[in-house]
Image (cartoon, rainbow, N blue to C red; front, side):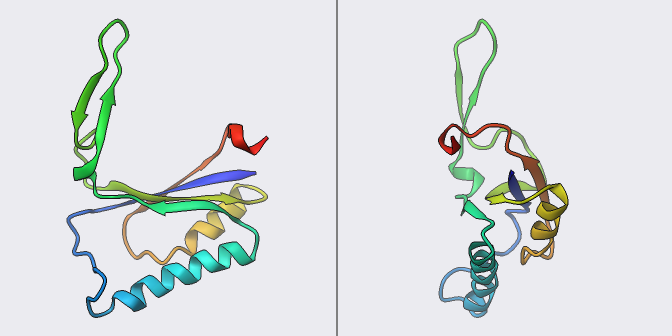
Length: 120
């Protein structure tokens, strides 16, 4: 069974950039998490997203032309920043895998994948 782990955090929080003190240590914990998913057969995919300032939103309303809006869909304290697509036996295992993400604030939303056309 596949699950999507949606990662939300506050974009206004300070972010480390390559070359900053502590960046390699910070990224090392994420790379170790990724490697553990790969080695244990849970990795399907994942990515970090560009900031919401780079987003384009399509607003769909029945009977009206599609509206294209620069920026995120809604004003929120936490923004969708990345995801993991994992394979797990059940929701309990998916929760345990998500708990191991190297995050100390934000939120994680775990949802079963209902259909993936490329998965057969």
